[in-house]
Image (cartoon, rainbow, N blue to C red; front, side):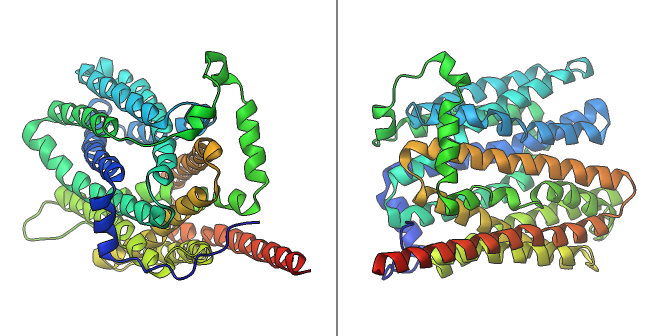
Length: 441
């Protein structure tokens, strides 16, 4: 029987976030580590794409880089889940940060066109480290926060990601222009060292590691624990639906391609004597900023409404899918840049709500022994749909389909996960009613 919604819990306010950061030293350090590493990542991503365009002159090289930044997480997910459920997650995060420090520094070796091939294996290696780090971070949050603060922590983390996107995407280009691309690589490498140091100062109990048998090399290819994890997820109907919630955000992959193309082709900023190329870049930047702003505002508003009630969290995910559908359907018919920004912002208010609420539900309803595997599956499925979505969107655009048509079609496609989630909610409610009747009888 699933835990019942909590009642009588105070509503979420700005003071709640201040209190969480002030009183919870462990979460404060984890949050600070997120800030420094994610801002560095956005600086770094822009520089990587710039480097590829400079040396290859092909947009396909950037598309390949995007796929390599997400797809490996799907395939490494099972191994990452096993590791995170067998060893201390704090050590997993520190190790991933230190390895990424070395990987990013290695990007400095790419000085000529003949060395550009090195970018791709380095991106794969960095993505693999992220596949270990992110499930560990998600699994740690319930261990370092009170149950009533889990939604607070997730909402704050999501808002921080959005702010980091706004800062990193807008300032990263300026930093690269003033200091050079090598300086950006160095800054990002140092951000991983800072993150490792902050996480190293965290002190918390990890009972899953104390009761687990020592991890052996052959365990990394032994998928028995993964099968147990799958059985665990299948045994919890609500959990099984929730672990696929993020992968239902079918617009994430296409959004990166659509924002770039629509900013350049349809919504360049016309201001004074600004040349077309720079106007197109600013149009893309404003659309990307609207995406980040929506991702920031969405969870802050919806979390205040949902509180910590299980039913409202699930209902919020349904509303999130519908808001995304409306936003992208309307984006295709936008008459100007500012209208397009408004629709992008609305769509990603819904998208970020789905992300935060599904993460919170997984944390609240997953046994600590299985959290690593559950979050590895959660991340892996979502990365798979992001990669597929970006590839399919690119193929349609290269085939001559209008970006407006693709955007509107993406909105209509989002009705599919909305319907599936509504069906899962209905089945879950029916199951709870049956359990209640059997209990009373």
